[in-house]
Image (cartoon, rainbow, N blue to C red; front, side, top):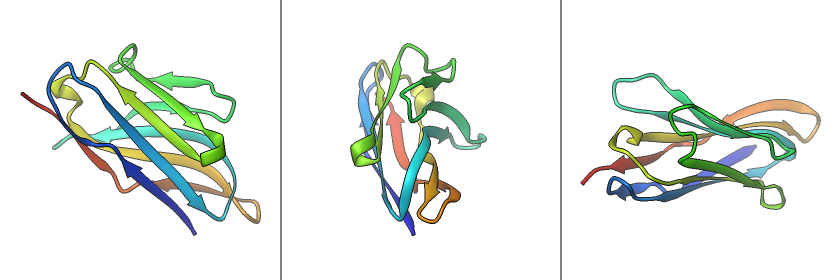
Length: 120
């Protein structure tokens, strides 16, 4: 079994900041890519950012320059630092992890989601 536990969502005013965390645990052999997606009401889930095991990161154009993704490999944890938040960033944010389970089995796991609301 593999578990992902997300935290850090909440309500913030426009221009504010939040930091999301996602910790993976369980029968994990290795973790490749860790990333974040989001889904706003009435919209499809969209890619936000990702980071591979070597530390190379990637961002959607809509968040580039405002969001920073990072990871702590020792803790199997990925973070998303969100600055200069806008109302259009309001969504449920989901952690996504590509990993190899003990036994060599590739596996993709989604977190349960955490709500981010940007409003005055």
